[in-house]
Image (cartoon, rainbow, N blue to C red; front, side, top):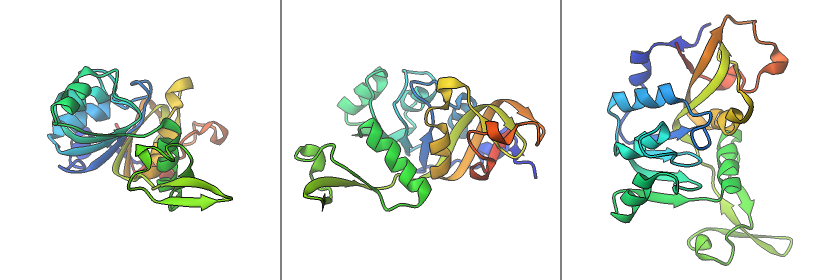
Length: 214
């Protein structure tokens, strides 16, 4: 069964107040077409989970620049001047998480785990209000899973069942983000009939993908 849907159908999936997870690293591997449809949908007051907020006005950064996000959970915001300005003016809530911890929290959500234990931040302000668990005489912070209502991903090649191949560094967060969304929407530079992608080449299995943008 084909998972391909059109732009209008994609926009109908977005709602105010959703938690949206977006793959990509400094906009490499970012689902630009899906981000544009999210903007066109008019959805706002979003919680955004992503590696970074990109650049002002570009790709994932445009969600910040156009004030659609009320809170962002990411590793850094330093490359987007709008993120820093909105944070400073109290317009944007920012939760910064070390990259390794962030990806494991996303992975935990996708794998159905109760969280991950990390020593990063123990004994600092990052541990305030967090559950501390002792293992083998060492303290760890319990980093809870990070799921999302909607996850947006991108492949360079896909088949009609949503099996994806990613190109080089554009792979980054995409396979992990695909596991953590209640609804996963993918875009691809090329879509081929089912069976034309060798199973050994699949990087994000179609079982994780609910919809594929035509």
